[in-house]
Amino acid sequence: MKLPNFIVLGPPRTGTTWLYRCLGQHPEVFISDRKEVRYFDEHYEKGLPWYAQAFAAAPESARAIGDITPGYFQHPGVPERMIEVLGETVELFVIHRDPVERAYSAYQGALRRGETHAAFREALEEIPRLVSNSQYAKQLDRFLSVFPAPRIHLIDFESIAKQPLAHLQAYYRVLGLSDFSPEGLRTRVNAQVPPGRSTRLNTLMRIARETIERSAPGRKLMWRMRDKGLTRKLHSLNAAEQTNGDLSTQVHAELFQQWFQQDQEALQAYAHLRIQLPPEAGDGSTF
Image (cartoon, rainbow, N blue to C red):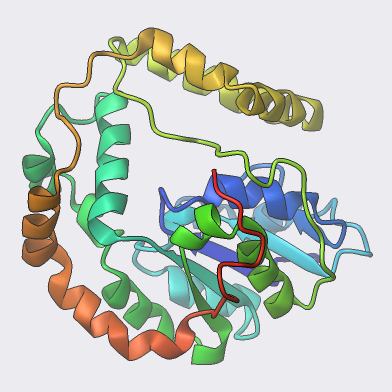
């Protein structure tokens, strides 16, 4: 039975779609056809054979088999389920992003889906996961209570934009993979767009995308469309005028202090989990 030897825990809105695309091109890596298998949070009752089916096609040459599911990060019970199924040798990756910016990006997605119509401040009260997915120390505490610290790797979101190749090479080193530079390395994917005028149309577009991406040719088609900016243009056709404004420096500071400062201070105790990248002179690319 083939099962993952690495998991990208997320959280959401930290570049996991870009990572899924890039890691999936590595000749020594196999990642499930679906980016988010969601076994350990939403489908655990379906049993191990259901989960294993997502990785059954992994070739014998695959040195790394991965599950990239951002929902695992804050879901209760996930660490215990993971260690029971995968053991304590599985490598776990967490992408650290400024907590307010991550929450704001997730909030914009909630607006677009029609999940909320509240302003950002009110939405933090209304949608608990906006906050919990940005509480890094709190969530890492849960995983560290189950897994040994050397199996948990914290890497900065900013390195994706500043040093995309160096960011990927950090995963390669942990997983014992050879160097590789994927196509679309500097292509930004899954960028946020303003909320849509029609939630129904957004839902139909999401279902259509998920249906197309179930096959390998469909996934390649979607990546080509993303590369050319076509998917963003399609979303923009339905985009409503943004009325909530950008996240100002003052609002950022206020919300950071209110919601995340204590957690970020606690996170300093986990500096040893951070993957260190070389100086920015590495690949010097941005997107």
